[in-house]
Length: 536
Image 1 (cartoon, rainbow, N blue to C red):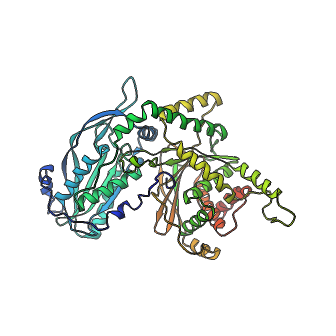
Image 2: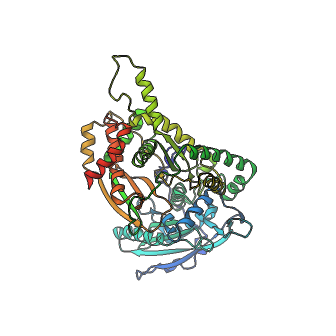
């Protein structure tokens, strides 16, 4: 997620590679040897398949990293629909610099796989005496699809079609390399490279590292110094004594949080589930983007904290809880050695927010005022009163997001036995922006400007799924000058009209706060009900 997961922004990774780009002085001498059929880039316009060979510096085995264990648990819970976790990227190569040839781009792909060990690592299924592990190969060959197009517009469309096709099926984890690759050509030049990654090998940040490095390898012939560590070395460190101590400290935070929060945020089904059961609602709002930035600047927190707090407060209000528990996805890349590592480092954190504490603090503050003090809001904390405590709670969540999922499961089983029921929030938050845009200079938006911006808000239900291992999953991305917020939910707990209400209520909550009228916390349930009624 955006706030602490990446201490040094890499949102500009793709942009950085476009400055002062250098063209090849010569084709790589080994490029012809790497491919078995690159010369068959058909003039007849047919899509072909080729293979590119690679040779790394070492091979070896290791346990899964904790991040890999975490995503493997999610994959198993979601199977056979685990293609949901595939990560796809399209790299345009016709935008600037010397045109890329097929041979040069295939050579760059080979060197990308050689550079990043995760791309030549496969899953080793669980043995009788333990869980799955990973095997790093030193040599092999990567299948690559090459698809010709007649012009640049057609090439862009073909790249998106290839992305969809390559992303649509689950990986064969023990047998398949964790990278699927395709090239789109116009004539004898490559216009787009398409990468689809297995989530066991890469998270969203790692995908951007790969896009950056592939562009550099194509344009300059080099991606610079290799990463400071490797997934195998990281795994061995996590399973050593010092790593286990750190994991135990993180799980102590989880246990304290679980005990302070409700056992789950969505305790009872409220509707007959739809078919497919899981629906995704999506709101795209320029007003929300401006409002989040304004509230974040006014209260000296990140925009991610504003969105996380709004999500937690609305879920708690809707379900009648006084304490909210949300599991944000944390990138775990604050350490310098991890910033360019291609691996899955992301893990769940636990964010616990006591809404009642904010109200108590407000009552204390109001009680200290004299008779001439401000009376508005006396006894009722407002949404923005949650932000200081939420900022601290978020930092605690981020710091305790590196742990062994096997030990996390054991904690859950212990609490289940004690409580007589499962203890799990089933409420997730994923800020997928790698970095937040800087707050625009100048005055904060006026209420009138925000009202005008809301006229451009768009909502829809873009997707449904049969199975997702959660009840409430919020994803934050950007679309132009707007924030795009997607909510995938179990329709037995949040029917489609409730999904819509949560997204519009989030926009209303943050926009009115930016306009100077943050809603009182006791009014948030009514805000949800109003959002449902207004949009029905």
